[in-house]
Length: 260
Ligand SMILES: [Mg+2]
Image (tube, rainbow, N blue to C red):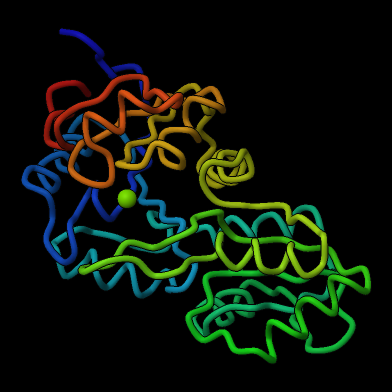
């Protein structure tokens, strides 16, 4: 059979458009997890959305019948925390993020401040206001480092799009002239954070997702495998027109049951 993944150890699954649509698992998604478990393989879920906390996702997945916990769900917020702890130990952070993200940072021991930060971290802040934008830009202009959790311009919702962190990055950069270091998919910090959290090397990882510029790019640009599913953001025309190509593509996550 073509494209077997039997030598891979860790499957990193995107959620929306890959594992579920809205609140409903994709047909065969739960069975795929069962097959992975039976065959002694591991999986984790990864989302670029840093507006929700890990416990929000644990609840959502548990309601769908998935056994999920802190060790099986990562977000771009988790990667940012990991990066700060490893590379910016003791730094004071001005965080532009939701109360959920703030809670996650505090729980993991990141020092947050409203005055004279070393770093401004920009997350997907659905509670952002002019004061936060003004303060963030001022701190960056005065020399604070600029880090953003992920690059997505928009976040797909039921009937359209919400402006996401990538759009806000452009505003901050337009005002300050400073470009951020960006975490999350498709950047290598995410692969490094997963390697250190799981002990699995990247050549044994498979990224599964519906978006070429994040889910697929992270795999093919960083020495991992990347499988595109056609149940979300990408159709045949988009795939053909894109310069980013997956290792291979399948109709849905259920198509992987016979390949692992
Ligand atoms: Mg997706």
